Image 1 (cartoon, rainbow, N blue to C red):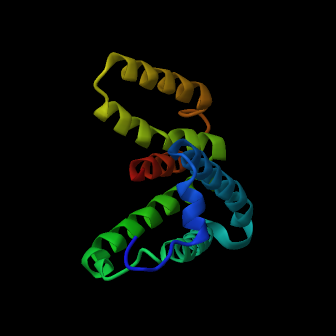
Image 2: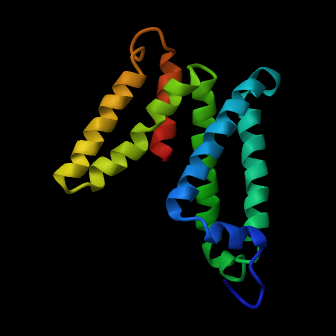
Image 3: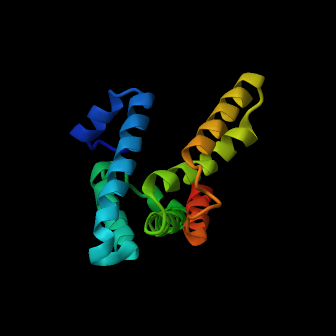
Amino acid sequence: MTGSTPPSAVVRATAAIPPPGLLLISIVSIQLGAAVAVNLFEAIGPMTTAFLRLACSSVLLLVVARHRIGHGIRRHAGLLVLFGCMIGAMNLCFYGAIARIPLGIAVAIEFVGPLGVAALTSRRPLQFGWIGLAIVGLLLLTPSVGTDLDPVGIGLAFAAGLGW
């Protein structure tokens, strides 16, 4: 924390949650947001839905992190803008995917991105065993890939996975 600004109640509360708990909260938030977003597509479309989700989350992030934003932001502004653009592109790809293929299948395909990072950074046989188990799970979750699914939706889900 910088300066004498006291941390907000949200920051104090999240500091008390262990990292696995924060990860679970993040996963639930992402999946609930996607489930709600699918229902907005008919009214406002995937692009507008993605824009609204990113705009709302940006405002929330600024509110939560306002005490940490200081003079160093100018030094990192370019990276922050690049990161924001990458998150935006990833969300547009994902929302485009779930507009074309079922949500569960899109999420499973998108998981290939983090799974690829795990495969590239793993060193121990046990780690590769867990990766293999995850791959088997993906294959079981996505049996209709390559059959009647929209290939553009599949491609967008893979592109979203690369964003992870």
